Amino acid sequence: MILSINNQLFLFLLSVLFGFVTGFFYDFLVIFRKIIKHFKFIVQIEDLIYWTVSALLLFFIMLKENHGEIRGFLILGSFLGMILYFSLISKIFLKISDKILSFIKKILIVTFKIVFTPIGYVLKLFKKIFDLTIGYIIFKKIKLNKINLKKIKFKKKIRK
Image 1: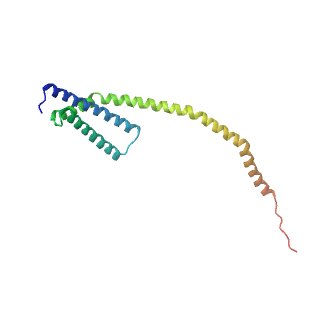
Image 2 (image 1 turned 90 degrees about the horizontal axis):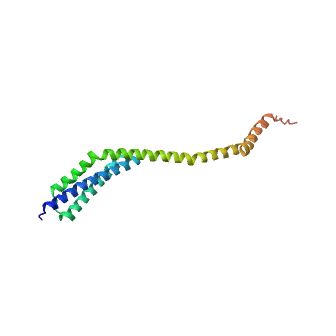
Image 3 (image 1 turned 45 degrees about the horizontal axis):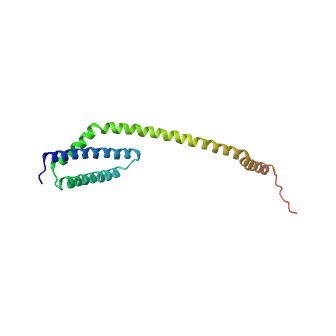
């Protein structure tokens, strides 16, 4: 099917936008990997799935907008979009996300300290109460029993 120049330009810009968005979502995958550490094998599987889904989405866009005709300038446009994203925005986006993640991590640490510090004090208080009451009684009896056993002299029975 013959497309007009306007339609071809629209499809090219659409494929550039698709490449840009593909790179953007790949950075979200990178951020997810920073949050939850992955084995290298899992990273490779995730990448394989990600790029397969991306290629299928590009094909479906071509199928819908270009009636299934695969044109080189559409693939080139998607690569151009990814190159533009990774060279212009990706580094800035990842630096900002690193700062946001470290800020969230600090907030979580402070929140856990605020929540668990009183719990720690309450547990220490219960331990002191236990030591002064039940623990004192139990351990004092054990010490008394040891002392009493040493003081008691056993007499030998003499048979007549």
